[in-house]
Length: 280
Image (cartoon, rainbow, N blue to C red):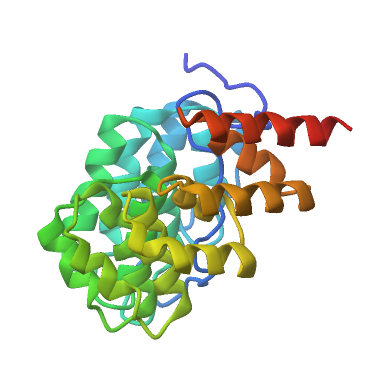
């Protein structure tokens, strides 16, 4: 007899990524596609095998609950084939935008931290996709931290859609790109693309990103900007990080954490000063 699972857990277990925010805020567009509607069921009482059997047939009304249940139960590799089948079921139906079912498959694969899930997602990323679907595919690749060959990334760095270029300049961090490719992103007309190129350049240790990253620190600071600045740490950056850390309660723990990762004595000293400031 199949084992009946317990109630949903509040948070995913070890081996699964926490739910991530949509990187670009685009909403998938529902279009006509083959859809099978199962009878209403209480998913908490469905066995694992029966749950996995439902996933390839998921529709607009239940795909979110099914994918959440996969993560809550920590099904991991057992769910990869079903999610892959769900994705391929809707190939060719994304001319007007990515489908909710497609997004569910992508997002869930991206949040399962196993080699099998990453391999399945990599196969999807390396396939050819229409422009209506490509941004969502690449957002999943970013969320999963996939390594993509530079020869494929270069096509996305010049893509006509800025959201594709943002993903390209984010994914390029793992591709050991030549400096000129990153510098090209700094002159992009879209701020989000320039920011992605700056962050990647800083994380890769390119000092030419310094001025732009300091502007981002004033304009829209965040953990990635701070990490990129620490990647090209110098006296000026240390002074400014200390100032921002002392003045901004939200940024302070982010700055402390990044400075603690360095072996620079001055950076470690500033991290200690900021930690003491927090305790006062």
